[in-house]
View 1 (cartoon, rainbow, N blue to C red):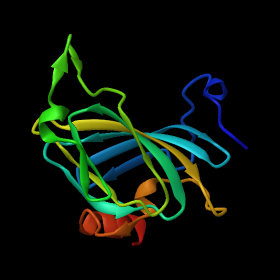
View 2 (cartoon, rainbow, N blue to C red; view 1 turned 60 degrees about the vertical axis):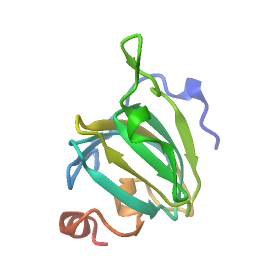
View 3 (cartoon, rainbow, N blue to C red; view 1 turned 135 degrees about the vertical axis):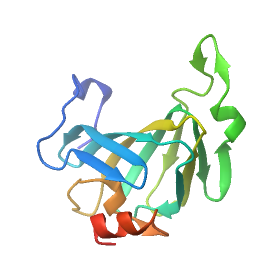
View 4 (tube, rainbow, N blue to C red; view 1 turned 90 degrees about the vertical axis):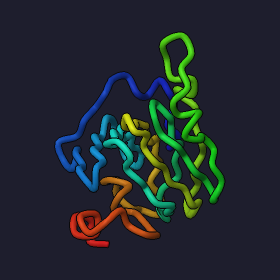
Length: 150
């Protein structure tokens, strides 16, 4: 199955496992169907998401506001870029990076916080829950380990 943009006619927050609160990050599933899922993440100021991978998830990460993004050890949106404004909008709003399974990536929220959307295709028969539970690498902290069983 391939997900097309017209398949998403409205936000669809499922009853099962829709919310996430881990180490300064709040997430909500805004779409889930079969092995496809979209999560909106809001990060408290200065929250660090260490570089990690998702072995069973192929995704696109879409910048909304205030996030420094790294991919493969390289900065793809810097702290300065994350705070740029053009005509009342974040200059890098909707910039998207592809994150393939096992691609190291991470981020840091600005002093004002940050937000991004993760558009996901879950692989290998793994049922979508939250990407924080399909995680390889340093966790965000003890809370993350406890809540996800990592």
